[in-house]
Amino acid sequence: MPGRREFLKIGSLALLAGGSLSSTLAAAQLSGQKVEDAKLKSLLEAIQPFGPADFQLRWQKASRLIIDRKLGGLFVEPGPTMQYFTGVNWWRSERTFGFILFPDKAPVWVCSAFELDRAREMIPADQEIRTWEENESPFLLISKTVREYSRTKKIGIEPSTRVFIIHGLRRDDPGLELMDGSPISDGCRGIKSDKEIRCLEAANRITKLAYREAFGKLKEGMTQDELAGFIREAHTRYGVAGSGGPSFGPASSFPHGSRKRKNLEKGDVILVDGGCRVEGYSSDVTRTLVFDRASALQEKIWDTVRRAQLAALKACRPGATCEEVDRAARRVVEEAGFGPGYKYFSHRVGHGIGLEGHEYPYLVQGNKLRIQPGMTFSNEPGIYLPGEFGIRIEDCMVVTEEGARIMGGLEAASLNEPFAVD
Image (tube, rainbow, N blue to C red; front, side, top):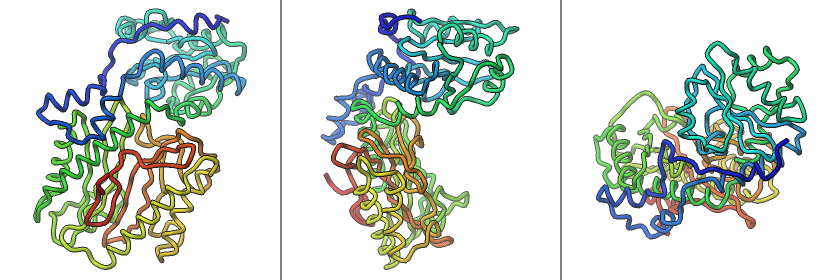
């Protein structure tokens, strides 16, 4: 097996699709928008693109997990995990493309021969690429590579790998043992570095500022699409592609909106859920407000949801289980008379967030995983009255040694003040 010295040799990566979002500040200025928010400006100035040193640290952690699990390596095809470990953004097609990460070795790539030149534009020159022709089996090539570099026939498969690849590997080499690779990929991606957290902080603050700007343009009779357009435009002025999906009135009782459209009327609940990305890292923010005057019931439910969110935030600390955080929020909702269980609070309290908007781990009943510093989650309790309205408040939070804190600031203060000044 190649030694550690080969593992530590890292070539420079070309600028990949998606670009560097450390240029968000410059992009915003070029589009005529001066970033006046001091906290956002500070965050953007501190962001740096991810490069070889970041990937090396990730390989090292993956190597330890591979060895701990007594695996030979980890196979990864295109997707967020490939981006996480290498910075390479490649598309998924019927032609198998991916890499195998072996302990103490840079990735070994498997690529269709006719795509080799394009792959070389993205993959450092000192990383090995093995090719297969159109009339050859990529699965045999993967198998041969595993047998050459691995001390065991057990190979971890990244959990999003498509079934035809798994079937192909089993068919072409029945002796290869395909194992669940999620302890490796999730074990690395689930704990965020300070650099990743800065990207998440910036993305969440941008979305909140964009919402706040768009909410200033609410008017009677406007459509959901008009509000969504204002939210997109505001994100664009900060140099990112962002979105927010509004629901008006009874449609807000659908947690992810309804196909039915309506124009805004006085007394309507407005629920908006959306986000953006900074260096590939996602925001996920929901705010609920009422156009004109709120009813007593709307006020009561908003207050209950906010208290549930604060309870989840307090419960989210190192050593607690994921299900305990969900339970803390659900208890507040049930004690307010909106239970039992999932009757009105119909979803988990949160999900992991990073390169994917929804990713491991999940804050849900039954998940006994212990929370660790560096984990990042959405915190989004909601109460939904079918046919009437729904209220949800969502912020993303990061776990620290002391507990958890909201990313991006600008927490909800009331139905009339969805973004408190901070």
